[in-house]
Length: 353
Ligand SMILES: NC(=O)c1ccc[n+]([C@@H]2O[C@H](COP(=O)([O-])OP(=O)(O)OC[C@H]3O[C@@H](n4cnc5c(N)ncnc54)[C@H](O)[C@@H]3O)[C@@H](O)[C@H]2O)c1
Image (cartoon, rainbow, N blue to C red; front, top):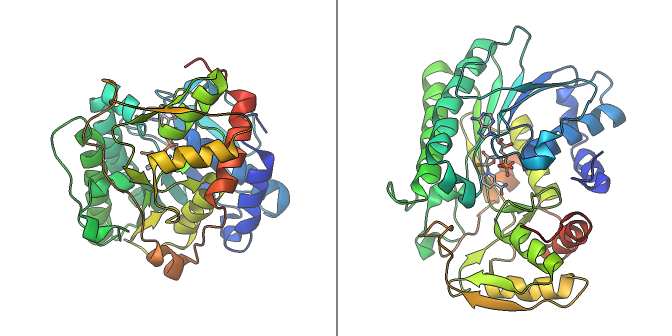
């Protein structure tokens, strides 16, 4: 286990999945984005399942070209039953062995990075998804595509909390379009393969996942705040501070993701997040002040130039579909999640962004 995850979290995820995860026994999972924030959890959780309850181990083939994996991802651990391949998923991947599940989690996920790499962001979600769908077709594997809650754009307040049936309010131009629109095309590709070829596809729309393991230079809100706390700097809240988000702690998110991989109804998309509380950035700062070990101050500032404009005003998932069809039930409340994350970040972050 590395310093980039908490062993107790990995044990919690594996234990919560003990019943359905037995389907992984003896199977091969191809994971793209295997050295990213979520990819590293998948690696650790499969290893924990093998250690604790899978008599016949699950084998993992993890791909990543390390474009945004950072120093955390670049350290490739030696693990039993894991093969890592440095591969750009916009190129075909030749693999002779069987593949039972494909988890396509490669992507350029942080607004800071998709602004820096707009074409790579498009390609990984479009060409990368198409090639993985061909492979799923060829191998008769179940494919799960990591889309995003960003496919909803800036939803009409009537559609917050947002259900999977909402069609979105998204711009095809502007600095966020490369991410939002390519995830939408990725979903369309899954739809086409499912409908025309009978490929078993599922789509996950995660809503702001956080937890230990997020890179200090990720630039999303919680790592940014944690890094500034470490440096003894005030937290910078962009804009008015009234924009809302929900935050899903990594253990709840991973349980939800793996329930989709194992039990998703073919062709269906699922919101995975924690709808409670929908919180403004200013209120988030207040919660952080309570959860952090030392004093925390904040400023309300203009958006920096590096931050893509047009950020959504509100973001909150309706998770009734995942609850009903998969038994998904987030269990870690925001204060507890913040405490686990901030304690971890205090030990690992340097305060130098
Ligand atoms: N973490 C979240 O809250 C969240 C929210 C919504 C959607 N998602 C989606 O979930 C997936 C995983 O998110 P994450 O937080 O782990 O992101 P991450 O940026 O930490 O990891 C993504 C990984 O994909 C790799 N990658 C990018 N392009 C690649 C390519 N062409 N070939 C091979 N590897 C490539 C990167 O090097 C990185 O290691 C992404 O597709 C992201 O868009 C995540």
